[in-house]
Image (tube, rainbow over all chains, first blue to last red; front, top):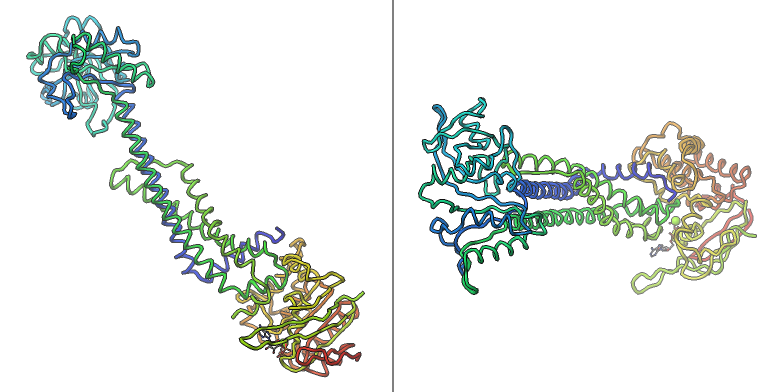
Length: 410
Length: 227
Ligand SMILES: Nc1ncnc2c1ncn2[C@@H]1O[C@H](COP(=O)(O)OP(=O)(O)OP(=O)(O)O)[C@@H](O)[C@H]1O
Ligand SMILES: [Mg+2]
């Protein structure tokens, strides 16, 4: 340990400067490796963050109940042909299933809405005052439905941000009357923005109206009380499966299905589906990072190769240093530090390049990327470890030389 | 007690079928403070002998005691430390580091010593001054004449103030005048600082400066006489 670090670093830098091109090419392996790791981690993390955002945007712990059964082949019959889910089912689930926090009915359809001379095609969801809780959604302005408005089929509506902006621009929509399918509805609230859904749909392109009003004023061909979907919020993530079982049991009972008879409804767990998607993206991100890691490894092998060449070339120098008193450790640290300098400079450039590449991806390909200081430090640190690891063997080889043989080396 | 003591030292090289005996049954004692010349024709084993007593090479047979320590029992790091602390070595072929200034070359032994680096530069400068190279400090070996390179190599051997100076033809590349100046320096070091000196030379008037002359022939000592 007695050799001083400053002079070792100076010696190493001089040695690397002598073969500028060679040092640069060796570094390139590490640069590409580290840049790839940084980019892949950023892309992978970005994808995960996006999915996580989408999960929270849909609402967490969500279960949806659809009419019609899943056939053996997994193909559900067209849901429009069934009208066997009712508001009463939704209420029963809310009241009787212990694992369920709340439910909201959905009766939806595409409509044309008009305000003044503004025209907009969107989707109307007939629902009740529980919908906002089910979807973890908050209001930007105005208020939620009153229970009384649901019962009386009041012509009131809550607008998503996209609809509000399309119809009203900068004006205040509250208490204005819009025409949905030529029926006047009064705007009582505006939702906060939620952004795109996982499949890329604009979740803010939406209007909520009382489910009763939707049935009576907009979608008249539906029987009173029958609905298209029940959205269910479980009390927590752990309760999701229990909630599903309870819902299934309750609905079979309510629909008077005999044992062995197929369900006439379908229960789906949205959170699970999205968690699967998240899992898949995690695996994907890991794979990408692994591939990038391999290129870092290849860069490391490049370092080892060059260090071996360097040790052979500088055998005489090693011999001279040993002859005047350099110990095994001194020679070893010198070559390890040289490898370390190569890999750390490469790592530093790689980090910068990786960040730039990820930025470009997010700018030109509009991918979501997300950096974390930890991942940057880890890849930089890893490049250092690669340097030490692959520098060790050549350094070890150099340190084992016998001084007189090294001095006689041609 | 002798500073250098070799017992039946032997160095064999197997080259193809034949065996070269570079050293053959060499037993010699050199006391601290002696000034010894080693002479002999080319290929007689002088450099091999110097490498051996400089702890750079290991014998095929026999023992070498330096300062009473059997060097055959020491590991590479202990030998390195002995080379660093006790021995200043001037190589026949200079062995300077390329692309490294004279000043830095002379500092190399100091880097591997346990000393504090603050006076390294000063010590290297004064060693180079001693050899008349004070205005060649920043020259690389390929920017120096053969004689200047040789003097840098001598400065490097002196910089650590080692008690034993081993010089393999230190004046081989120098003109007579400079050669004699170097020899006067060696004599002074030997008398004033009591540095033990063993040097290889072909020239009788150089050897005349020393007190004792050992002659080699075919790897054997053929004469050992006080001057
Ligand atoms: N590595 C080696 N392999 C084989 N033979 C060697 C080796 N090193 C030296 N020799 C042989 O050992 C003998 C002594 O060599 P050495 O270098 O000691 O001679 P020298 O007395 O220093 O000669 P010179 O005055 O020319 O420098 C020579 O015959 C040489 O061929
Ligand atoms: Mg010789």
